[in-house]
Image 1 (tube, rainbow over the protein chains, first blue to last red):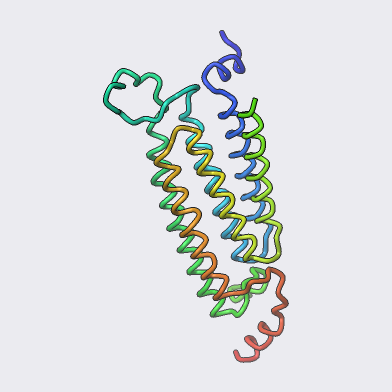
Image 2 (cartoon, rainbow over the protein chains, first blue to last red):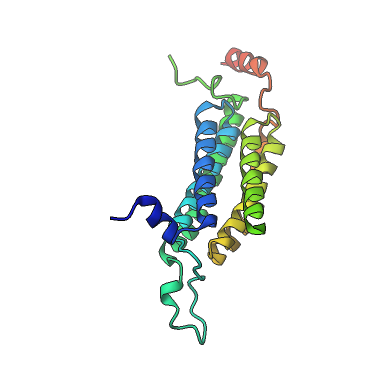
Length: 130
Length: 95
């Protein structure tokens, strides 16, 4: 039974550790912006930062130490075991584009809300309160 | 050793840009800080052996996201704490 840190350092190196910490900090900072900010554009910025952190975490999960990019090239067909996992990369490639579409939809709704209420502060948009 | 220094500088820049983007009151500077986040993020994707993801993040995160945020700021307010009570009173009187 190997210890957790031993297994971790066998497959992950320094790049991976720095990226895991960065991704978790980005998710926390984006969550703070989404929950505590009052301006609608600031909430969209926090959503975008949290999206970036989640994408970085996914790519970091598929990384192995001293791996190569998952691309077959002539003369290197036998290096499959050294390649990093291509599945999270394909998922993240899709997630980046979907995140852009979600941000665009949120911003268009923000423009419509501002045109209707003449403010972008969520404390002053209270038409549904009674 | 130089790799360690490079990684530390990158992590500090990306976290400082994220905190600046959340805390800045001027929304235009906050949006430009999210562009800085995307630059460092695409460098991280390249270091993690994902060059296709790095290219996509560079194109979408730096150019397109910044452009749509700037269009939104042009159509709404640039200042986060703008005093809008007058607008609200005018709006409620009109109703």
